[in-house]
Amino acid sequence: MDDVIANFDLVLKAFGLTMGLFLVSGVASLLLGALLASMRVGPVAVLARAASLYVTIVRNTPLLMIFIFMAIAGPRLGFTFKAVEDLSVGDWSVSAFFFRSCLALTLYTSAFVCEALRSGINAVPLGQAEAARTIGLTFVGSMRTVILPQAIRAAVPPLTSVQIALLKNTSVAAAFGMLEATARMKFFSNRNGDDRVLIFLTFAVGYVILVELVSAVGAVLERRWAVSR
Amino acid sequence: MSANVLFDAPGPRTRARHRLYSALGLLLLAALAAAVILRFADRGQFEYRLWEPFVTPEFDRALLVDGLLKTLQMAALSILFAVVFGLLFGVGKLSEHRLLRWPSWLVVEFFRAVPVLLMMYFLYFAYGVGADGIGAYWCVVIALTVYNGAVLAEVFRAGIAAVPRGQAEAAYALGMRKSQVMNIVLLPQAVKIMLPSIISQCVVALKDTSLGFAIGAPGLTAVGKQMYGEFQNQVQAALVVAAIYIVVNLMLTWVATWVQRKYVGERKPLEPAAFGLTDADTGLSTIR
Image 1: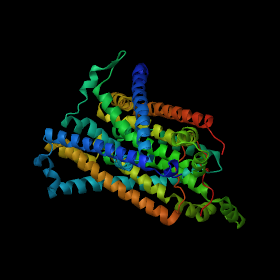
Image 2 (image 1 turned 180 degrees about the vertical axis):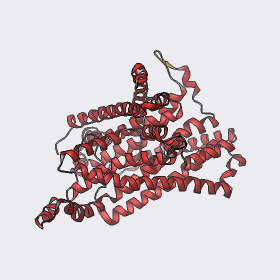
Image 3 (image 1 turned 90 degrees about the vertical axis):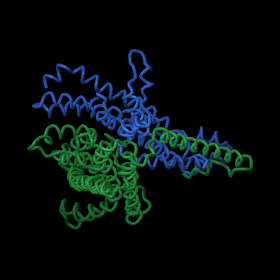
Image 4 (image 1 turned 180 degrees about the horizontal axis):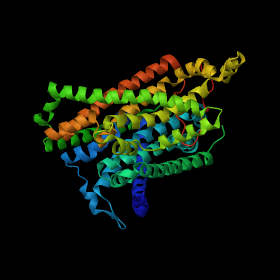
């Protein structure tokens, strides 16, 4: 345990990387998920089918398999993503591992984001849309002023659950070369065989704190945006 | 809300526009498919020797028996144990005694928040590895048991809370004891509500068995790894293994929907409450 305390900056750095994976793929999955959801509820049948097929396939594939596609099968097809290593944000240079992990997490999570958003739209009572049409609002008008504000509010609780799942899923990146919190626990655990339980608890509590943080943000948003029905 | 009320019945111009969007969408999808096929051809991924293992009975048997069967076994065992675990702590969370309620709450919240892979690594390196260790197989089962058990505990609690209060009151009025009320009156009614959620949790468990890959546990993903290790057909192995997972999961989802329709009716399936929130009574008022 002394080893962990002496090297606590490594623990923090690892959780920083976990947060980095979470934030990047969280934002990206919200965007891709919103695109998928709008394709699914939109009037163009081809796009609706395509989005629904994507969601069905991805939801039933283990995340680990998606990581295998990105990290092991991808290079065989020439997708190594080495090009991103030329990019750098400030002092941070993006590694191909980080990019691949974010890509896998985003592709996986966006299917669940799509479902959460769709359930939000389904939660808006039919009468709201009918009333909006009746008072002469156009499609854009009724969407912008009546449907979406209610749908987004209704989607906050399921979206929070999806993002919490994403936060925990970042741990899968540990098996594919990212030295984030889970991989760091493995590192410390193998260096200090006698303290395995304490080391596990330290990292587990780290995850619990992050999860409670995300869930608290979700609860605040839910309360602030609550509508009385 | 059905989406079609959002639009007027499309007129000729809108229909023409939708046709245009459909054509553009189809074109885009076709281009995507063509790009994938071209890339496959370009890299020689259509070569027969790369696909051959998957049409060889010997390897198919390995995939299905050593792979799928082991995966199903691990998932089934962990769901079985998780139901027991969830029942114990779900009922514990409803207990009137603080000494039971608080530890149950703590256990459930903890195991729900800890990533399964972190749990697996810990179990494997602390207890699994070595001659007297329990082995990777049981590490996967235990890690999945505690995670899914914690999720199911929340489902059970919500399910029991969904039984109308009059049922428990009537049972008490007949002179039943607390354990009798739970065992004879509440649980049998709650099980019916919870069944679809338990089956959908099987899908989660099945998908998560693949995490055993990281600690060298047996299963479908592990067999896939062996095959691409031997034949260097990473792409094909990944596609085949993913397809097997998808088919099995779709079958499970289909069973869950069927059970839902047959035993529960049109009510929404129970969903575990979000973290920290323990008020799951919302939307769960009456049983049929």
